[in-house]
Length: 97
Image (cartoon, rainbow, N blue to C red; front, side):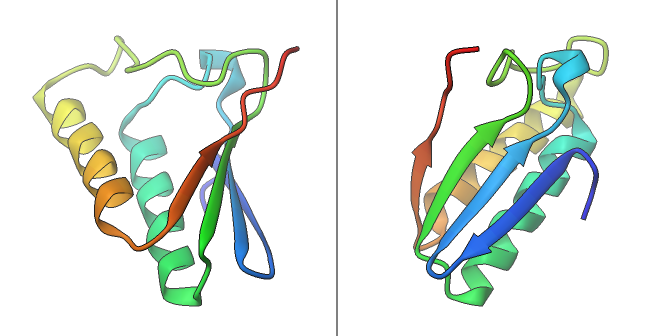
C-alpha cells in the first residue's frame, strides 16, 4: 500500500486515510491510484462500509495544481467512478482540528 493512503479493516468496516497532509491531502496521480486500489481491495474483501478520513488539518484541498493536467482530471474521474460503482457505503469523517 502506498504511504499516501493508509487503510484498516474492522469486521465489515474499512477505513481509508488520505495521508498527504503536507499538501493538504490534495489529489495527485499517486494518491488517486492508491485510493482506487484500497477501495477495490475492500470490495473484494467483503467490506460493506468505508470511512474516508484524512491526516492533518484539511480533509482534501482538491486537485494538486502542481500536477494538474488532463491525466489527473481523468484519474479523478476514475476515483469517482470507483466510489459510484462498487457495492459499498461511504462515510466521510471530517474532524475539527
